[in-house]
Length: 243
Figure (tube, rainbow, N blue to C red):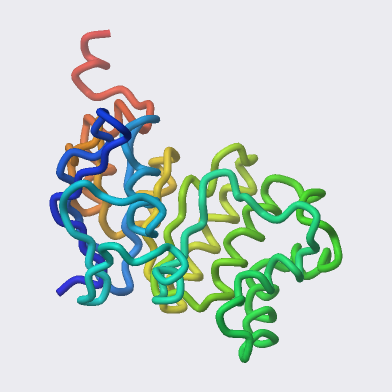
């Protein structure tokens, strides 16, 4: 049994079906990436896993336990932590206070966990008393990931962690995602930066208008002509000859 399983998941916004029977698996220790254009259903998938949205049909299972009708705060307490698109740090709270919010369920490892986060993100350690709202976009993304890590997650759900960030910061964020995974945290990564995501992931899925259009090993998807053309912005061999 996989650590995280989605089976025939259907999610509706009113009369609109955002997810149309999505099934995927995430094995313990993996980085799995979910690719797709805007509106494909990527964020909806993460929000449904984390309990913020309710599916109309289908099942979500985490470590063998169904997540149906479990509220979001209890899903988080089970070990699934969601870092939403847009960071959403607490702007008028300091870095330390933001991190403490991530440990709201259990504070007995607070000092150790905060030192671990500061080890991953030295820039946060240098700015501990600075308000979250005064940080750069990259620093806010680091803080959002750090806050999620304070809950000692088994699975980290990351929604567009590279969005709006400078290339050097993107490199840093993806490097740290790799370190987090190497430390034993399973990652489900939603990303539009397909090249970076597939280089870090072991497997990938491609969502198109609410359905899984492609799936496979990340290395194979990186070499797929359609992925290269649509998501990596590269020309295929046939197109190069035609040109």
